[in-house]
Image (cartoon, rainbow, N blue to C red; front, side):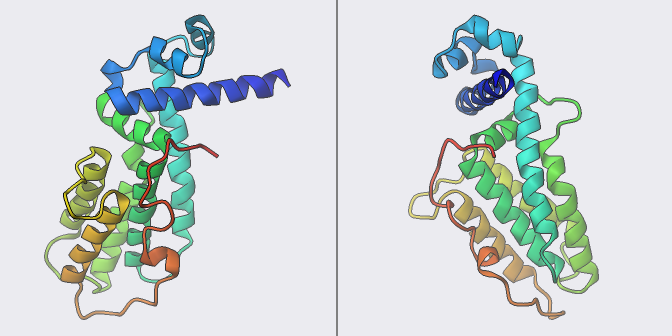
Length: 218
């Protein structure tokens, strides 16, 4: 019972810390503000996480775990690699928009990298591999090179992660990233093998794309 209570407390602290880092960044976040968010004394917080960097490590670990779980689901999608590329972007952008821990891990990956915890490593390398496969299979035009298309996909996600996705009169958030990707792919497709029909969850960015939430870890 005591161990379960300690686990719940640590989970609450990690979420509160992710919210603080998401709003203020690494240098602007404070342990005092995090402890106030969860209604806990600073001493109680430091009992579980003695330093701010220990909280950073916990956010990295949980954010990566949540993303890896989604990537495992994407791996099961059959057919053309382009389907899995799109599903990867759908999953990653939904996580960024809906899960504060993932947003925290993404931001801290830039501001406070932690050895062994690279959030982009959970999805960027596989995206590049799948675009290489699609290119080799003739699903995409010879130009641009697959690595350039990968960089474009990463840039779209980075725009969302940085909050640069709000243009007047346009869809926002994850939906806009997927719209941009679909427009790019429509211009890059060759006359090669046609894709199999996409499932409903591959055709849209899915439930939650139009909302923001504080997020929750499973």
